[in-house]
Every structure is written in structure tokens, then in C-alpha cells.
Length: 581
Image: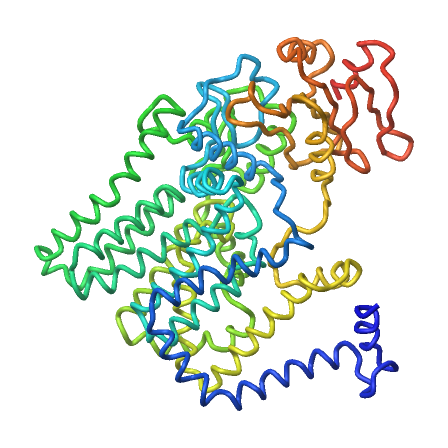
């Protein structure tokens, strides 16, 4: 009753002031701003003293994104994996937590074909180890891979502050760390998906935080941190590791005449990076059978994905593709384009990616960014701009783009924002607007009812927090988890199915509680049923409305309105014919 009366008071005719919800919101923001103005004389000295306490600040910044995200669990529960990227990374994590780099091929691998997973010569994810290690650590220590995701975001926010301490004052470094929490914390897709971003971003923090310290001291500790950061980037994003290494070399260009002084730090950095190189080579050998062939390359040869660089022709698959794999291959070829790049297509693609960089900046920060130009008189900031440009141009040779491709630049984006803010007279107002924007959307996610949330979600800032069960995965997983014993699920896609992967399995398929398999028709399916004689068998229909899982065998055919209808099996031919569509 109290809650009803509380929310009812937001109606203009039911409170003494005649305020509506928007009035209360504006009044709250104005009150916050006035309070900060009055408390500034007390808060500012305290904040400056606290900002100098490195470990306390890092602990606070690491805790904030975790606490804030856990506070949303009632409305936004632990993310349910969905899609090929999530499933491939989780396979990698499951493989690693069993202390393997690859898995033996399954004798009936044709049932388990899925995008971004190879079946021969091993059953393995095609992705590099970095994000898999993050997920595996969370899985091993806390029992769930998502805890690894949260810890990686926590490390990122803390390391952003540590990195900025080498570039600016402690106070502004703390501001940058808080911006990291608001931008990349509880509401960001890096916190709410399994395919990563924070691990590579943390690698960038280590590298870009170590460089100024190393140039100043030439100490072994900073060199080791630099090497560790480069190693983590190699494990996370191998191609972008090359770009990052070039940027590191350019940073020391003014010291070229003193190269003898750099030999020892370079050796220490190389030694610190060596474990990552060894792990990469070992994964190559375990997955592909060749020390120098990446799992990416094997997948491209076998399945034609991932896409090649734009200066290369589209790959040709050397395996028979499932309809879902064929669809993904064709889509990647379309994005790549026929033939190879021209100068015009390269420039057009590059300019078309500008809007993606919004991911790294809260909207009010755009008011400050032009002031960064004033800092370009210093070599270090000119180098920062050159690094951003090099990554932008380098990653443009790949036809796809997602923010996690350049995640290593996250802390540099923050540095640009902070450097610009230090030159803006109204920096406090801009930071207040950033805070208000974050608090507004966090409040919507934490407190808004379903109707309000759905009404305003379309106006969100581009963040992603899982909500509800739009694909029906939670309901289907719940049904299977509640069933007794081990399960075998045949996945039957509808004729209009596109891109949403459902076939995913554990590293050890035979011992898994649930085995997901492609529906290949009754005759073929019977081979797998005989292989798993003790399992309860289901038929999953992801494209039904709503998606569902039903006891097998059932027929499932499009109804008069394009929906799926059920009916008991008349004979095995019914299922076989349906399974062919």
C-alpha cells in the first residue's frame, strides 16, 4: 500500500505541488546540483586526498560496477547465453576449466555443427584464449562463468584509474575511473554478454599505463607490466596486438638514439609476454595440429568464416555447410563485398564507422572533446591521437566492426575526455550531466515497471542489459533443467530461421546433462538416440511462437498463419520429411 501511495503521488493532482513525474525528476537533478555547489568546498579537498590513495581508489572502482550490477539482478538476472559468439566462448572456457586446450572430435559430429566451432581435427572454439580464461576463472572459483565477466569489468574500471595516474593528476584520474564505471559498468554490453571486451580493455590499461612510467624510470617492474599487457592483448585480440605493438614502438621513437638504455626493459617486457606467446602456440597446435595456424584460419578454410580482410578475396569453404552456416557465410561475404577493396570503398567504410565511437563517450563529453586539440602541442598527446588513428585505419581493413575490436583503446578514450575536461571552464557541469545521464538510465533499469521500461528502452543510450526472455531461452532451459536425468534435445529450425544459434554443448558432450543436436531427420536422429540410450529426448522449436521444447517424436509444421502446430507422430516418415525442411 505504501508503494502504491508513493507512486500515486507522482500524479499532478495527487501531491501538494502539482508535480508530475518529469517535474520531480528535474527538481531532483536541480537539488543535486545545488547541493554539490554548496558542498564543493568540503568535498573537493576530501576527494583530492582520497584520489592519492591508489589502492583504496582501485578497490572502490573495482567494487562499484559489481555492486551496481548485482543490485539489478531482481529485474535483470544473470545473462542467459545466446548466439554463436557466447556459445563458442563458453565452450572455450569449459575446455580450459578442464585444463585442456582442445577436445577430441565426436564420432557423430554432424549433429553438433555450429558457427565459430570446429569439429575436426578437434572439437574446439575458434576464438583466442583471453576471454575464455576470464570465463574459466569465474567458473572455477565462483561456479559460474558470468562472475568472470564481472571481475574483468571490475579490473578494467580499477585499471583505468591506475593508467590515468601516469598521465594526469590523481583527482582527474579518479574522475576518469568513475567515468569508466558509468560508461563500461553495469549497463554496458561488456558486463552483460559473454563474448568480452573488458579483458582487451584491461590489457590496454596495462600497456598505456606502463609506457609513461617506463619512459620515466626504465624500471623492470614497469617493463614487466608492459609485457603482461601486450601478452593479454595477444591472447584477446591477435590482430589488434600487432597494431598495439607498433604504437608502443612509436612511443619510444624520440629515445631511438638511446636505444642501448632500452635494451634491458625491452628484454624484460618480452620475457613477461612470453607465456602468452607460448599459450597461443600451444592452442594452435592443440586445435589445428599446426603451431602457426590459428583456429581462426582453420575455421576460415573449412567453413569460410570469419571473413577475410578486405584486401583479400572472400574465402571458399572446404566443408559441407549446414543451412545456418551457409547463411552466416553468405552474410559475411555480402558485408565483405565482392573482390577486394578499392580506395573509395575503404574510405566509405571508414567514415561510416564514426558513430561506433559513441560507445566510448557519454553524450555530454562531446562538448569537451574539441578542447583536446589544445593538448596536441605535447608529443605524448600527439602520440595518443596517432594511436587512435592507427587503430582506426588498421581495423578498417576488416569488413566488420564492433567496439570490442578496439577495446584496448578504452583508457585512451578516457584520457582524451579527461585531458579535454581539464581545459574546459564548465567541466563540473559536464560531469554533472554525465552523472545525471547514468543515474537516470540506472534508475530506469532498477525501478521502472515493465510498461515504463519497454516504453523508454528504445531511447536508451546504446547500452545493453538483458531483460525478460525475448528468445524463449530461459523458459526452455528451465524446462530441461527441471526434467529428471540426462537430456537429448534435437533443434528444429523453422524455414525463416536466421542467425540465432541454439546448438551449443559442453566440452565433454557425452557427459553433459543436456546435449543439443541438429534435427537431421528421423533416420539420422535415430543414430544419435541409440548412441545416447538413457537420455530423455526432446524436440526444440526456436522459431515457434512462442519458442518451445516438446517431447520427441512430434511433428512440427507451419500452420495457416505461419505459426507452428503440434501433432503426434503417425510414423517415422512424418518426422523425416519435416526434418528435411
